[in-house]
Image 1: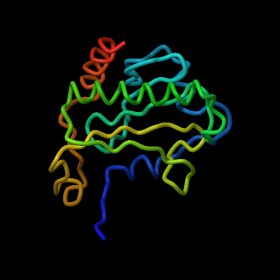
Image 2: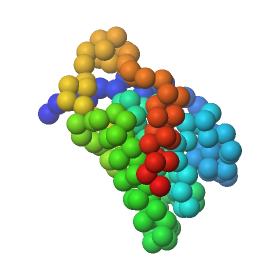
Image 3: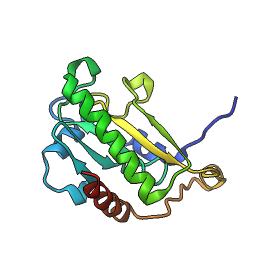
Length: 164
């Protein structure tokens, strides 16, 4: 079995987190009008998309319902469809702007499954490229992102506006 090491994630994992009472981080971002500051790249009727501040790879997006819930069963059919449609739009925008060779797309539901924000489900979209793993995370405790989040967000916003 091969092991995937992601030591750059430990800063987020070990950071203090507010208790799960009240609005989640994603609910607060959903209610905010500061899309550029939060790297929000698209807003639809039932959900929005934003770049992950602690990405696994360049272009790592998350699609998040406005409704705060940890359970897919709490979403309406419209909300579920909205999540998948925005996921597809984001993948198309990433394909257009970053030209990945493949994707990791999925959800971590529950703390034991790896959810960092347990109380608010979300879909991860991680673009992948052949040979995108290297020695830097393992030997230098460093992950290289080839482009600033603000620049990636601006390019994705432009591509997503064209796709509406």
